[in-house]
Length: 113
Ligand code: SF4
Image 1 (cartoon, rainbow, N blue to C red):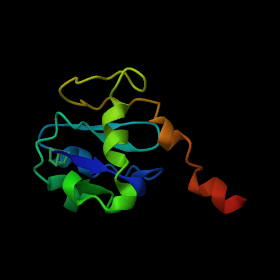
Image 2 (tube, rainbow, N blue to C red):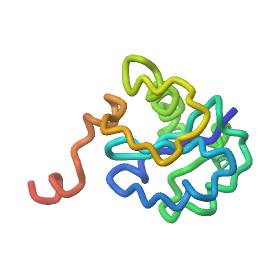
Image 3 (cartoon, rainbow, N blue to C red):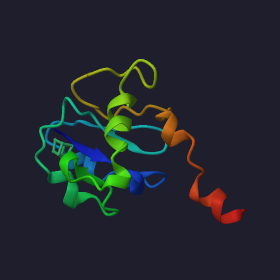
Image 4 (cartoon, rainbow, N blue to C red):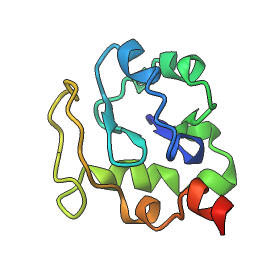
């Protein structure tokens, strides 16, 4: 089990969760943050730090957000970021996003349409 970052982080990336994570397992992508599922120790500290309520314990994910478990995991694979399991974000930022995130139309573009 791990914690999972979901929709409310996209195009916000407040980042308040990053410095409170005791194992530095929250990584920055282009439009959202991602939690490394194998590095997360499930402490829950990030949940209360997030101002947009984007983070859930995996077992408490609302059904409409269940696909974010795979999104967070797949982000680290060779077909997306290729980060694998570096053992800590260490402030690094990756420009890409999981394809399911990249496909979402930014809020500003939607509002202007
Ligand atoms: Fe980091 Fe704890 Fe949040 Fe996992 S649950 S991402 S270890 S702060």
